[in-house]
Structure formats: structure tokens, C-alpha cells
Image 1 (cartoon, rainbow, N blue to C red):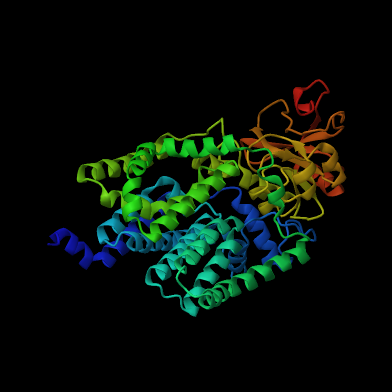
Image 2 (cartoon, rainbow, N blue to C red):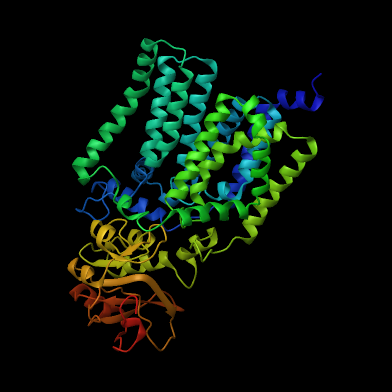
Length: 538
């Protein structure tokens, strides 16, 4: 006999699910933020919307982004007059709600009860990492949504054995969209495709060939056309960041990254319980659960292989969405007391992570407040720096700046920018000075290259000091072995009544000279024995 509570949940399931998702979306809105890297995509989108193409600097095509579909969406919003921060956050929240809905459908594919779906969505939506990356300005939530859609379409069709042409086309289009969003979505797509092939084991060769045609045709046409365009436009099919990221990171860093995530959320007891339940999984686990387990494992292996990320566990979001049905299955099969203990552990783990995780100096992983603090903290003010430079120089593209913080400063200044970390620069990505092992921060442009590129103002990592500071603090300016100290002045650029930005004035420019005179900016020179003037590594 069905328990009255279970019967009530089934009867009102959709209503409860909608309300639950609305509340979790409200929670994500309360956790909303924006980060500097989002403005890289915004700069590409602005240039596209303004008719300059998908370029970092006008007239210099290079693929310094990894989220093609997301950039197109932002560009469309800008074309319609929608501010990109607002557009990215609004779209992220809508996609977050959609991802939770898809997660509920996936859970019902794996564990067909309303209770399991509602609990699984609740646990997923209250996970702090999943919640904060509903916003942030990047494509994280779009990728999570599309990966969940690929998994759902593959699982649903396999369960029913109904491989119609339209269903295969739909799955193929979802895969294409996921790959256009991020190429690493191919991990999920490959597992989904293999799962489809496994479900066709009893089909005739003719049926398999026909299904492969319907599955592959849209995918190959769309992705093939995109890659051909990239080859003709950028001269390469892989983004420039592919050359840079992962060059000096290793398995140990990636493994530690995943460990820190698991430990911060107190998930090791859950993994032990999952291991203990493996025998039950092999007896009763469905094809859907097996596929999702393979997707989660493959994604986790990928994250380890690339060394993780420097943003607060952003790369774990797709894995969390895909393994939500696995967690729901574990809870559904657990003893009532164990189930309650696991739910309390999930809740406490998320609260623990949200309240205790701070900057990890070993991994150089930045937490949410730090990521947003770069933009608005009085000691950093990257948004204000960009706006101040843009206003001072009339957003003149003839003036060239060099920065490591290549997001909001280039976006708001609209000046021609050399990305010193090489994400949008081919030379730095392959020949820059080795800086470290932090993903995306592994090489840096030397002084000689900045001069070769005609950089006027070298900001490097922005140096913001109190307005009343009597001495100059020179920004970090890496130099190749034997390269002399730059014979260049420093400029104080006031940001407000309390702080000022210090920049190197590398190459003379009459427009900058005019701004120095107009705004009465102070200039000075670094003494040769000043530590700030020494080469990198001394």
C-alpha cells in the first residue's frame, strides 16, 4: 500500500517542483556575483555586436575565448541594448532553473519517485558551488544545462527503445550546442553516444547505420561548419587558450583540486557509502545510472588531468548536475536513518563550504568574494580602473595598454590591450616567461615583447595605493634574462579621493602626454636599486 505522503507528493509533484525550483532560483539570485573573466567574453561580444567581428583587439583575430555560443548570446543581447552583466545573470538564473528541471527528469529516469526527484533537486540546488555559478557571467550554467539535456535525451530514448529520426536529431543538436558552448562538453557527448551504441546491441546493422546517420548528420554539419569557419578566420581550429592552459599543471594539482572540493563539502562519507553500495548498484542499477556514473567519472578525470581551475570549483558544476541522480538513487535505497544522516551531511557540507572556504594558497583557488572583490574592492577597483582609463583617453584604440587582469579593465577602457597572461595572445601562450602552475596563469609577457607590440601603458597586475602615499610602488614587470631595467617613468592616475593607480609609461604618446598635463597626473622614476625594478626571479 502506498504511503499517504508519497501519494500526496505524486499528486502534487509538478506544483511542488515548480515552487521548489523557484525558491532555489531565488537563493541563487541572493548568491549572485560577477567576475573579471566574464568581461573577456563581453569584450568579444561587444566587438561582434559593433560589427568588428569576434576579435579581442579590432583587426586582430584571435580566439581567446572558449565559449562560442555564450559569446553569441551576449552579443545578441548587446545588439538589443541589454547590458551584458544583467543579460548574463538573468540568463544564468533561467538556465539554473532549467538545469534543476532537467535534473528532476533525470532522477525520475533513474529513480521513478516524486520523493527522490524533489530531494535530489533540493540537494543539488542548495549546493553552494552550483548556486553561485548560476551567475558569475560565464557559460558555466549553459554548459551544465546542455550536458544535462544530452544525458536526459540519451537516457530517455534508450529506456524506451524509441530511436526515431526526430529523437536522434534532437540529441545531435543538443550535443552540437554543448560543444559550441565548450569543447570539453565532448566528454559528456562521447559517453552519451557510446551509451546509445550499447543500447543498439540487438539492432540489425542496417538499423544501426541509419541511426548513426541521423545522430551524426546534424552534429557533423554544425561542428564541421564551425571548425571550418574558425580555421579560415583565426587560422586554427583550437582556441588560443588550449596552448596555454595545462602546460605546466599536473595530475597532482588536479587531484588535490578535486580532493579539496570533496573535503570542503564533507563528501568522503558519501563516497564511502557509495562504495559500500556498489554491489547493489551492479544488481539493480539501470542503464541511465551507468551512463551518468561514466559521465561523472570521465568529467572528474578530465578536471584532474587539466589541473582544475583557479575559480572556486567552477569545473565541478557539470559533474554535480550529472551525479545528482546517483545521489538520489543512493538515498532512495538507504535505510531511513542513513538517509537522514546523509541529507544532514549534504546540508552541513554546503553550509561549511560557504562559510569557511577561503583562498587556497596551495592551489591558488579564489573564492567567490575574492573573484568579485577584484572588480569593486577599494584596494583593487578593476572596473573603476577601466572606466577611468576609458574616460581619460576617450576610449581611443590607438593607445595600447598591457594587463594581466584582462577582463573588466580592457572591456570598460575599450583601449587596445595586450593580455600579458597570453589567453588572447599567441606569442605569450607559447613563448612567454614561465610564471607558475596556476591554470591560465602559467606564462607572462616579457618587457621586450610589450615594447615590440607598442604598449604605451603597462598596468600588469593593477597596483592601487592610497592617494596620500608619498612613494611609488611599481607594478610587476617581468623581464627576460639580461633585459635591462626599463628606462620609463611611472604615472599616478587618481581613481577617486582615496586611491590611485600606478602604471609604467613605456612608450611616449602625445595623447597620454596631453592627459598627464590636463589631469595633472604625477610622474616619477623607479631607482635602479628599487626591488620593484628587478627582473622576474631575482
